[in-house]
Amino acid sequence: MSDNETILTKEISKYVSNLDRDIYTVSNIPEEVIAVIFAYVSRSPKSFRENIETVIKEEQHGQERASKFHEKWVLNYGHASVAEHAAIHVGIENVSRLFSSILELSNEYLSFTEYSQRYQKPKRGDYFTPVGLESVPGLKSEFSELCNKQYDIYCELNEKLFEYLKKTVPVPDEKDRNSHHRALEKIAFEDARYALNLSTHTNLGMTGNARAIEDSLSKLLSSRYPEVRKRAEEIKEEVRFSAPTLVKYANENKYLKSTRITLDRISEEIDEERSYRADTTPFVKLLDWTGKNSPDPEREALILISGAALYQHSETPYKNINKILSDYSNEKLLNLFNGMLTDFNKHDNPVNVFRLVQYQAEFNLSEACWHQLLRHRKTNWIVKEPSVKNGFTVPPNIRDAGLSELLHESVERSEAMHTKFVDAGIHKAAPYVITNAHNRSVIGAFDLWELYHLVNLRMSEGAQWDIKNVTGSLAEAISRYHPNLISPAIKRVD
Image (cartoon, rainbow, N blue to C red; front, side, top):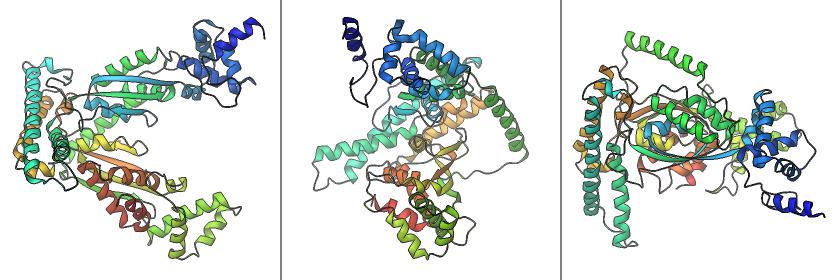
């Protein structure tokens, strides 16, 4: 091996985990260049290591070469899958809770870790001031007074709830006093946050491939909210350091914007013509499910799952399998289904055929609960805007401690400010004053596979009471039609 070859080999070893095996990791290279190296495999017989050798000979680890490649293949020919190999990590701080919920729903392939109000206490003054308040004299200062007053209510609820719980919840035999009090402090802390509003600051860590981020940015840049559009521009600017070409065309999407405007206009006309009274209590309503129009919905779902499972493992055509299964008794079909759950434990996901059984449900739930549920991105969410018309949720501990009036005060102050914003024509600022206690109405479409995950995570012992109740209500609604399909999921958390 020549000296030049030795030097090149040492150089390549900085970027791959090994030089002589079939499987290796690639690191320490700009994300856009990694995307190019992986993309070359479709147009070159060379190995990834050989392609690394090619690109590191270029300046800036091949950054210029990467840009030219993407100009040709990604932008001109539409090979957007190349962008999926560029993984980008973004820190996002001091944004509103309203923004974080919109961001987290902008693409199902993005991953997030968010500052949790269940574990961290915000500081006084940690809130976003919506655009447009300056247009009405005194409104900005009134908004500031609202946020500060709600912070005071939050602190008072926290303190009084903790004192109440210490008096009413005895120390279990197996726990020491200090650890018991820490657990009670956490419960009080979780419930007090229902008094805070959606302008409250939060922080997030976001990871995604460039394709998902580009799609997300197009949606965010088309948002009705100025904060969302501004933050999207900032994210785009920072992401361009890692993958400049891959997010080059992440811009406002005229189709998304015009569709939203059209539907807003039609909705306003409908709302003016007829007045519907919203259900202001938290609820879960099952709207659709596999076998809904069948006299035996569970049997239809069992045949669907069993047929697909056997199709994978036999040489018999699908239509023949279904014909055979139609002659099976319900007991025999259930035995087949349970056979797919042999050795199934809380750390397992069910087999993929569970995805064939579909559900659709409507939820009216607190913003505090919604901000947990929206993280289940394998569910397709249809989301209404934050509103004061769907009622609000009072945590049971707040009610039992005789502290409901404090939370009511926070809610009433928000609703009064919401009315002021709407009357002043500042509609885009109004959602920021919605509290964590206010209910949000959403529809979720999901499958049995996701339901098992949801039940396992959100009905476990450590789950927060609100989302535990919502998930329990969902499981109960589904059990009316698919009792034997849902029972294994519930048994995992019993």
